Image (cartoon, rainbow, N blue to C red; front, side):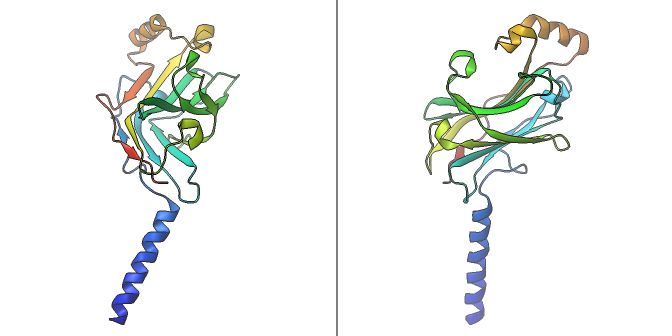
Length: 205
């Protein structure tokens, strides 16, 4: 009986420690999955994306986005993950090439607004060129402050590229995309999953 009690207490402590370190999605069980596609340029080709939280940082939502490859060239790239919270569209993004050569910045927020940035703020993020993984750390108060038990729905990832001064201002260039696709056979953008949405995510803290 004493041995059984020790085992049970040990299991409880182990589970408590695990839940303190991290909760929910990861690279091995992502909310969003997509196939590697031959007709998408490698650095825009989505593999997966996931949401997670940490008990020691309950005021943050973390989002991971894995690409086939990461390129930090100054070509204007938008590498984004989207979801709805209570009917409000929210997103987080790594943007490349908007503030000079190899400039990278991260942002997150809600609504689309004027040029997509009206309700968006700069956040912390990181990327690993070897693994193709981007990690974004989002203060919850800038994404409508979701509470424990709330659900993020309609999850998906989207990548795309823009060109020239018009692209810098936030406008797309379909004609250029069409020409580049005909010349290279590769699209300058991807969406994951290809159909519908990824799994919902439930806020843990």
